Image 1 (cartoon, one colour):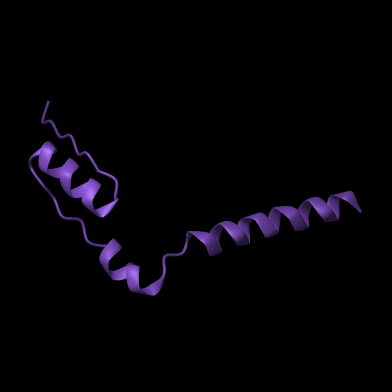
Image 2 (tube, rainbow, N blue to C red):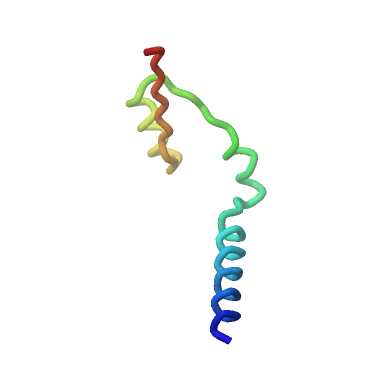
Length: 62
């Protein structure tokens, strides 16, 4: 009985995580667009005004 309960809790937790992770339809289109900015200060100002996070990308040939 306890094994069945653990399996049920695990399946429920996985389903809840997937269900809560889905964005509402009106935000789906906007959330897929990344607006790249070359200035970190500008990126901070935009992120604060839109209540979003900043994605930093570092690249080097060496």
